[in-house]
Length: 186
Image 1 (spheres, helix red, strand yellow):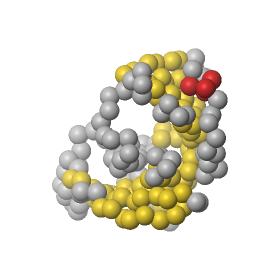
Image 2 (cartoon, one colour):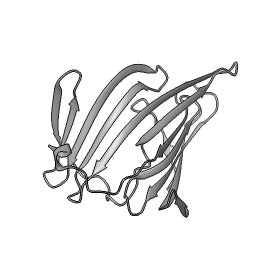
Image 3 (cartoon, helix red, strand yellow):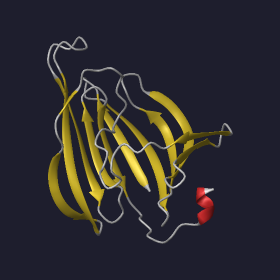
Image 4 (cartoon, one colour):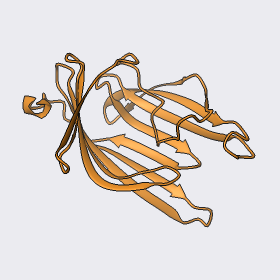
């Protein structure tokens, strides 16, 4: 079970807290299933959703199945590999408008540590929107830090910071290493 919590602190000190959950499975064939319960998507204009989305990835078939059970919608799209599966994707985080002139640093390795019995490797990248790019008088600095489970090969913990959308923390818990039922991937 993965939980992400986004906290936005307003100028008056008030805090807006949003939480989303994700249940994930992976079988020995490398197929994954993610059931995502979205209460909202953050951003400059947060969107309240209160919906569930299921994503099934089948790397052998190079297919991704996106299901919205509530609306009875299913979409199949091809999977195009863009990075080694053993590398965490540090470009994820709260949604950002397209075409922003973001300058990204090279990933910085944070070493390894134990987290709930799992050996995790950490990486961090920093990003900056230059002054004047979107009407901002000073640069806007953001960061993404992920701790990637070496055995599980998934992100176990992550923190995304963006002063425009707040801080989002993600944590995977209640890990069951048993082989999941094959029906979950059909």
